[in-house]
Structures are given as structure tokens and as C-alpha cells.
Image (cartoon, rainbow, N blue to C red; front, side):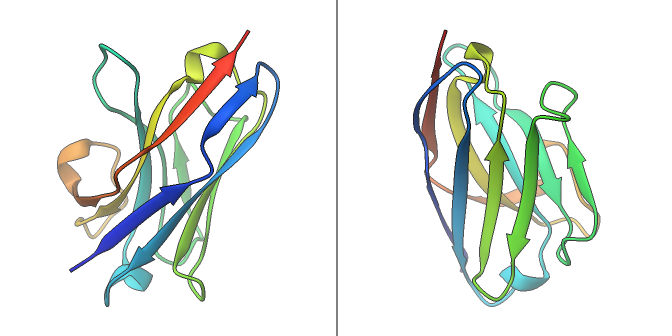
Length: 124
């Protein structure tokens, strides 16, 4: 069983920064690729970023590339999402997820465990 708990969400002004954390538990987390998704009201859940199990390769949605950074600390079983230069359109609930794929994935159906989400609100 894998459990994922996100934290670090909140209210930020446009141009500001937030860092999200995802604390993971489970025997295979340290060898799993991980991802962040987000869902705004009335919208589909969309891919934000993914990272390989070793942390050596990362992937980003075009909308966040250059502003967000995904990282992980396997010793702490934690995945991070550093969000800089925030925009109002980044407002959403952000979810951490574990990939069940042997390669990093950008689609929801390749992820099998999800956290409960953390709200990020960016004001203009």
C-alpha cells in the first residue's frame, strides 16, 4: 500500500513562490517514478511535472516549464514541487501521484496512487 500526503499549498500573489511537498510511504516508493498534477474548478486534471525514481530526469508541462521545478529526496521519501513566478492561472488543487509505469508518464491513467491534494490560490 502506498500513501501520499501533500502539503505546502496556500495563497500567493502573482509573481510569488510556493513549495509543495509530498510525503510518501510504501515499500516501492523509492523506486517509483512520481508526478504532480493539478485540477482547476471545472477543468480536467492535468499533468504538471514528473520525475524518475532516481531524480535524474524530469518532465514538465509547457505551461510551467521554466517556472516550476520537481525534485525528490528518497532518503526522506518526499517529492517536491517548487513553484516560482506564479500566475493566477496556476490556481488549482495540486495532487501528487505515483506512476505504475516503468517509464515516466504524463497521463493520468499511468498513475495508480494519489494524494488528497493541496489547494494553491494565486491572486492577481
